[in-house]
Structures are given as C-alpha cells and as structure tokens.
Length: 187
Image 1 (tube, rainbow, N blue to C red):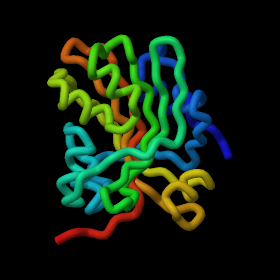
Image 2 (cartoon, helix red, strand yellow):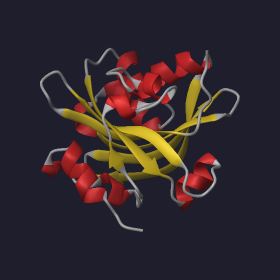
Image 3 (cartoon, rainbow, N blue to C red):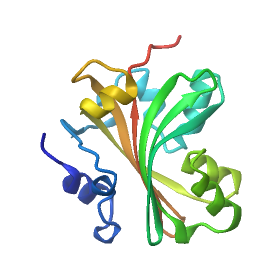
C-alpha cells in the first residue's frame, strides 16, 4: 500500500506542522480529495459544513457521543491520537486521527485534551475558545486497520474530511482526519 501522507499534509497544513500520520503510523490508501457536491447524502449533511463534526454527529444520531482512544503519542508541544467516535449505545459513528498543538491550549482545556475523552471541537466549545474549521473533503478506500476499527468488509469506500482548526488569527490548534463509516440515510 502506498503512503500518501506527505501529499495529504502538504494539501492541509503548513510545512512546519510535520507529518502526524507518520507518527500514528496510519496508511491512507485510495485517498482522493473531492468537491462538496461529490459527497452523497447522508455524508454530505454530516461533512459539508464549517462546524464541529461532533456536534453534527450528536444531532444526527440523537445521542451523546464519546471517544474510545485507540492510540496516543506525545511529542514536545503536540498530542497525537487515534480515536473511535461512539454513541452512548457503543455504536461506532466515526474514526479520527488528530494532531493537537498543546501550546495553544491552557488550563482545563489543556487537561481535557490530555484526557482524550472529547473531540477537539467539543473541548474548544466547552471552554469558549474561538476557532475556525477549514475542512477539505475526501473519499478513502478502507485499509485493513480501518476495516477492523469500523467492522467493514475489505476495501469499503468511505467519506470524510481533513480539518484544520485555527484561531481567528490563523494559528493552528489542531489537524484532524475525520472518517465516517457507512451510514443509512435518515428521513
């Protein structure tokens, strides 16, 4: 499987941000950036917006959500994590891989990030920290590790986004790969 990590990071982040997919050892097979109109429902309503994805997923599922941490790595100034996003009923509704710049967060927000139980957007909202989302939409063919995490057949086409969260001044707070499992359309 070919790594497309450096291409993804070049498209999303400034060069000094490093390569968080390498730190978390994530392969990104069959990744293609797409325009919002190429995202079908229900994924379109869940991914094509500038809001915190956890709030959108919570409303869509009509359940509280929480994280199951799969992997955490610390480097000076940064926390890297892989998580599953789940409902209170333990239904998996997303996969995330993030790099969070700890120096941008202080006090209780910093502690909440280290706790790894809430999404970055939810933490920023809770602590009233102003931020902007800068998503790029994508499709990705699941690999063996995503298949296992999301209980999928091999090679499932998934929809997601790469989201860069910044301060209003443009300083990067975090970078997140957000991937949704197959979901049924809700009427």
